[in-house]
Image (cartoon, rainbow, N blue to C red; front, side, top):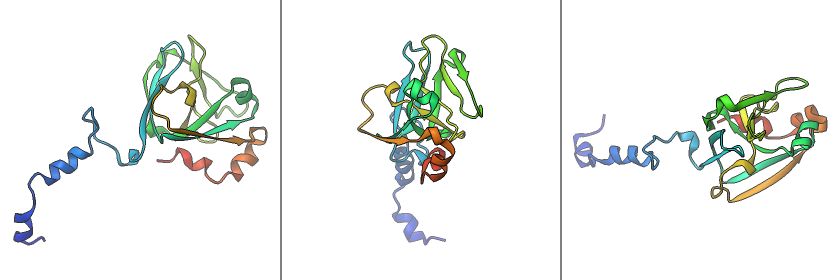
Length: 167
């Protein structure tokens, strides 16, 4: 137990200041897993689907050459599900699956834009299209090609992809 002298010297507002420093500008308590991340917002073309995502301002984007990613030009970065929040438009989303049906290719039913999806490599996270984010929160984008034509081999041999959806 702390000595009475140590307790007497303690600033009574110190604990409150500690809590307040963990609040964002809207008064929401920061989650420790968001430390060092920024809140990006984005959505589809028509605005029916809107989301927020906590990620670095320096994005690591995958450029996959699998059949669907090539057709859609699906460049994406991966985040844990806990870092993603759909703000509106759940009723405007439709989903396309194929092959293993593990990847959930969600898109807006109105404008057809896929601004996020559930990747096969990380079914516990989301793949976010950086070009669907609102301007002003991205500092840098690093693009890494990934050989989706040999998906199993590429994912098995990748040093970090499976961990990108972990908080």
